[in-house]
Length: 314
Ligand code: CP
Ligand code: NVA
Image (tube, rainbow, N blue to C red; front, side, top):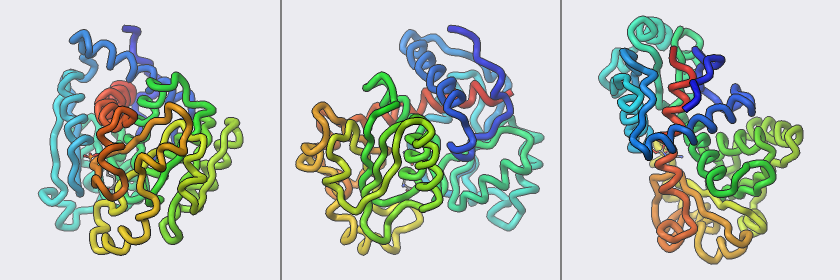
């Protein structure tokens, strides 16, 4: 394969908004190459002797395994760091932790609650800091989703993507991605579960520049009309368990089922970042049906995370 470009070395990935469309395209092209090479059992060993720390304040299956496998395939070593076992849990500051870990590691991934915690790490670290999910954003998921949509439709520009459900972290990052690539994005959410209006405004401004559109609505059927992809995520995100019952009541009309998918464009696909709550935000026939890309999205977490690490780690 062609060499890995060096222009992104040292960059953090805390928010999708910090990366230009060209930079994201570079990453997606590398991810495609890595996927093809892996199928031939060829590995790109660009991380020999590098150790990457993975701090988790919340559970994870895909993010953790994609990192651990991806780091091994790139020739590096992964260090799983459950947050409760770090001095962070006893009050050591993000600043001190970031400075110390910068002397020991080559990159650091953090999955946590506040977006500001990831930004503080990035501000004080001298190694790349990667956002592995916060309450506000899930930019790694958006990378895998972009790769999956490109595989299916060839290009992102002009595609209509409808997001149904809670206006959460996954919705925010997807919206920023859609804006960057000039997609037509609409988020359909019930009142009280709308995405952050500042994210909507920024994504809409991006979309206008790129020839697309970003909108919100309260009408799930109107949102999916003509959509090429219909995306949903859990109604109760990690940390929101106390409000699960009221969420189920409010979000019920936003379930992605066969009838709703039938309103979308011919050949439309269903997407889900997983884990899914089958029968809540998505019906079993859609999740396990032939039009669902959730399993491709999950695999593409590996290829996109490998591409990101190959690009940013020195
Ligand atoms: N989609 C996703 O981030 O999955 P995990 O929570 O299992 O990492
Ligand atoms: N919105 C979900 C995504 C899980 C990958 C959560 O934050 O729990």
